[in-house]
Length: 248
Image (tube, rainbow, N blue to C red; front, side):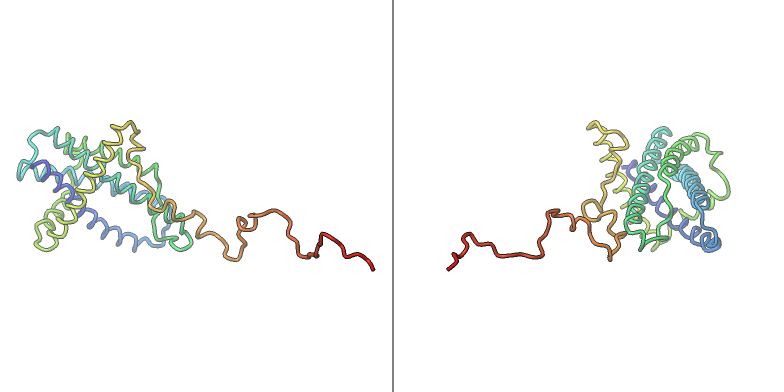
């Protein structure tokens, strides 16, 4: 039960961090709205992952100081690393899904979804897990004024009567989704699948949308319809009778 409570608090931590980060990101994008390039987008992503991991390390240490949920440090590090891994995998899958949808309907959704670099995301996920393990062993690497402010803000929101309840509910859903994702992945690995195959998310648009659906010219004839039959068509015809009428 203590392990479940520990994972639940991590889910709440992730949810409140995303909320606070979204506010800062909105202000930052508003100030730098004239700068549109991949370097800005990727830099923001890198900073977010570093902050996310560092705040999680400090949050885990703080809740263990207040009430010891995990007696052994190694168990806490393992559980936290697994939770971070599958939570970030879920975020990766969601971003990949929206990017695929953006590629299908790019004429309508261009500019709505941010650029997505799959290789960078995978690198950040692996780096976040490694940084969490390292930061848990050497807390001085993650302790600074920024992470302390984030951690204190998360705890203050958690203790707020109304908003705390809302984020507890959302954190519960995050925990359930993360555990289900971990269960599917472990089941896939046990069945002989690779890690990439086990964590692959089914395409919700598969079989419903064509990749060229929104790119077709409505004034262009459909070649598939024109190539149904290649046999020549007759525009003129004449009557053919078996027997000619005899001359009189």
